[in-house]
Image 1: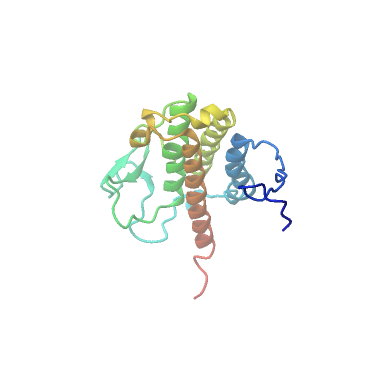
Image 2: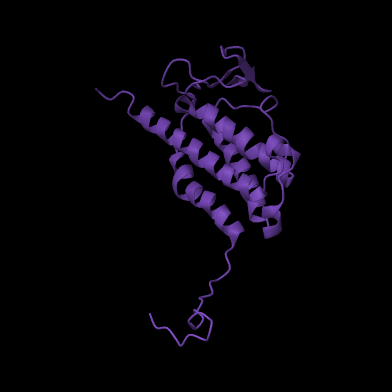
Length: 210
């Protein structure tokens, strides 16, 4: 290390370090692309070819599912149409295995639809009034629509929007920043998408010899 003459009573002089300026980060784009890349490259292609049987297939006894009205044995069964979704509050520990139908219903209502409604002016969503489909094609249409509503809203956020509090729609997290909610939704979709992908693998190999 090169040092320079010490001024009387002072520390050795060192010339100022050079700094490298980097381009500003588009945080909205980064947050949005994290989810959009996963959806485009991994999750949505894994849902192609989903059949009605596979959609509601139960790999073990006691699964939570989407069922014809009046056939559920879960503590709660909610929904507005011919099918209801199994539920319990509080959630039991450990939680039951959830079918693909249940997981898609949860993503549509609790993860994407309700948040697009609360934060981006989308149509209202809640578990009790949603019409859960009994077929895979309709469920995927609902998933595509709520995913598009949420991601379009996220793409419209500016830096000030990302810093602002999410407000009373998020209950005890009302004072948390919008960026934190966007990251949470990203995690939720990745997590439940992985569960769906695993169920597809299990269904494909369900009849394989041990």
